[in-house]
Image 1 (spheres, rainbow, N blue to C red):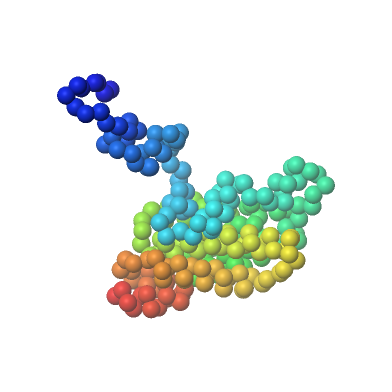
Image 2: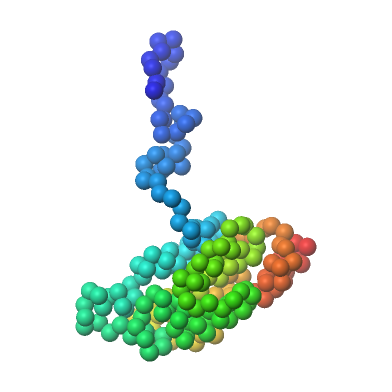
Length: 213
């Protein structure tokens, strides 16, 4: 509570900020409805993320991607068959990573990260959430690779539907590798651990590794 003081000159005080000065972050916290942090927030929102990748991953986690199975709920005439494999209903869980096409991609990415192959959506998400709680190079690689995998799989799915363009799993893997490598080279600056250097080498980051040791 502020009280009038005739001995002082009038001044503007921004009540949303503890300091009395306008701050965007304080104003945002004042206006927004605060909720507890979700367990996957570090997997999506982090300083060196690729925004368009994180956005698709965020929609996937919320199960808000416009998959064919979701569209079929709106209209029974819609074919919900997966365009990547042609063998199952196109759901979020199928696309990431139960579909044979995407399993091949995730298997290669998992191998490059040296993590257990897990193609069950919720199990993979839970496993990753427990291992990205720090800012080490290895954690960055995990987050970038996971988000990039979902982004490029979704783009390939859209390309097949809207442009009739088809690419092999190997081509998608190359694009994932390029995005991860370019982002790491341009943003990660800390000294990598021996484990991080080993994994980074599999992503073509030998220059980064030798420069930091």
